[in-house]
Amino acid sequence: MTPMPPSLGPALLFCPGDRPERFDKALAAADVAVLDLEDGVAATAKAQARELVANYLLARGPNRLAVRINNPASAEGQADAVAVHTAGVKLLLLPKTQGTEELDALAEIADCAFIASIETARGLLAVDRIVAHPRVVAVSWGPYDLAADLGLRAVRAAAGDLLPPLVHARNSLVFAAAAARKIALDTVTSELNDPAVVERDAGDGALLGFRGKFAIHPAQVPVIRNAYLPRQSEVERSRRMLAAAAGQGAFLFEGEMVDEPMLRRARLIIGAAEAADAREAP
Image (cartoon, rainbow, N blue to C red; front, side, top):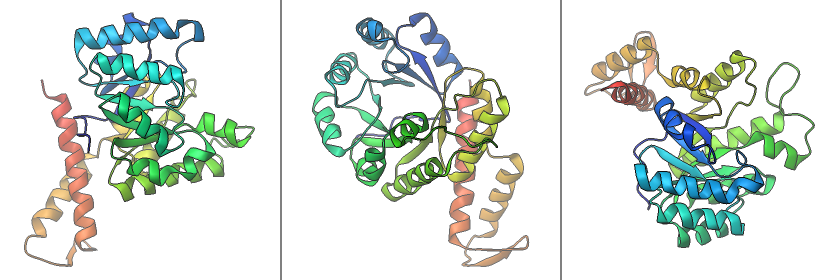
């Protein structure tokens, strides 16, 4: 299996591949900068963006960088993969992933880890097989493309909640990632005018078990980080619980019956807090 990249979140910030003056800023702002060769770049600038991103990888190295290529089943996406693989990329984001055949073909081109993005009905129906692919280390999704593929007239209901088919897709990713022991990463929130929307989306994703979220603006990064950071009270209680568990099976702890599943959750909370501390360390 392809080794897991050292960091996949919690905040992964997109940056257009034809805006090299923003590359360093995106990297400084986020945990992972995603240099975008797909939707963030006009069709007439694709070739230039590919060259700019490859040159940046060569000059800086691949740490904390991912590249979103064009559709991996297309000639353009495969040209992207060749260029950034030659430049040393370690992590590719694959839009509109629909099956394992295109993953196998891409694995012949680029020897690196993949984040598969589910953005079509066909991809969603194949998500279990996609996530289980040995090159895939994480899975995400695209509700806007998926809504268009399904023929939905909107992404959210009037109250701001995702429409039920999209809730189903989001939940399916959580199950597929957990079954394959891979990472689930939540999608972008495109509504920039209302900070409460990204705050709610990020909080919901963290509760559901996503490990991070994509951002399209640097202002979203601190909101995402805060949502995915365990509260100090959660961390302290988790540590007390693990200390009290020594040598016991099921036991009563602060009014709650605790057994191994609760202890596993406590370890995850502590691990997330320690990872955040490590990111903040100089």
